[in-house]
Length: 500
Ligand code: UDP
Image 1: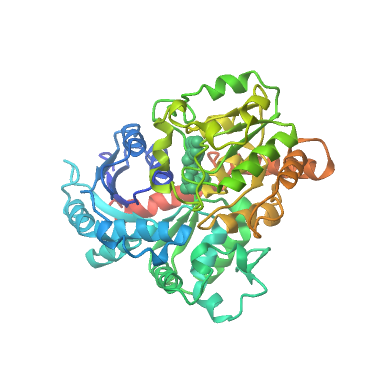
Image 2: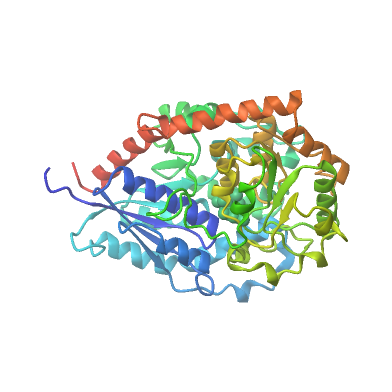
């Protein structure tokens, strides 16, 4: 018709910056490619007040995306239960709890959107899009007769693991590792996500329960692309053909941060230390970028070994988000996102880095306590490698920029991502000794040299990463696989929203 009807999409995210950033980035792509057709209302559960990072993110969005910070919830009365204080587990539990406590507010907001009070035009609510940690919202959608979709901000391999978790569980012994349907690599038990490590724990049975809900979604959007993970994606598509009630899978990635609606690639990210200026002065492909994401933290011994390993490698490096040591690797996750607003002076780096390290590496290395504009850093021609904790966003950003990885997983599903990157895609290396505790400086130095310097192994890794980068770019082109998939999904949503 001539007067195009707008379809409303309700989104329910979680109170963690990298989650919000991924799902909102997807929404931006949706409204950009199909403008005038969609309006998105994103509901954001909050603990305490919204973080500056989230606030800045929300302010950078185009007008067709509205965000609502839900009334803050408190987690404190449940805090005495430190028995579940296992890194990632505890973190996930906290996020989950915050989301659960926000459900009454989610319900009210979705109901009002459904009644058409979302915008003056009275758009139809096409779908509700939740995330794994806000999957409860799909039950609300179901009750209200709204189609529920899941945005899965991780790999298709992880999605396959979730969708088949019931079957995999019945296989019994995981001693020899498991073969996730559609994935070539056998994942060893120790590389499975934290909450799958102890199958007698409550967290494990909760995981199985949540995965059952995945199957009730109308569709699942996965932040990956067919060319990279054809096996896992097709394995489920085959399953779906045989069962009309199975959710369809939509590979719409790689979705990475692009910054404000007006700025260029992640153009609005602050660069308080002018690390981009520093990179300008370095030779091409010469700098190793080191980051453990928005909250990853190392122990004191491990920081020391890493620093000395960087020194031994004799390579240039940019080490960001360097935090005081902690025995708990996800220590800073929930407030780490705010590090981007912290100036260098707040962190006396020399207090916990090896004696004389900063002086000895001056000029060759830049170490900073604060957040870096990562997407712009990875896109810089001086960068030659990325030592990463393998959070899925970081992995995708590295792939989009064609930067080979050194996998240093810490918590949650990062080890599974590392296995995929290193053993599956073979676009990175993993230092030895990781599972046994401390990775020693000699090993760190060796791996860095291997990835950064001339040599057969490094060459192969770099070549495969460039091929993957090209495939990612193709997937996002106008007639690329991910763009076509998104168009199909948009069409479906418009129909659900009442536009025929
Ligand atoms: N990030 C950044 N600067 C930093 C550290 C992280 O811009 O100094 C961004 C990074 O580009 C990515 C996100 O924060 O988009 C981190 O997400 P990821 O999934 O890699 O890890 P998480 O923070 O969830 O552990």
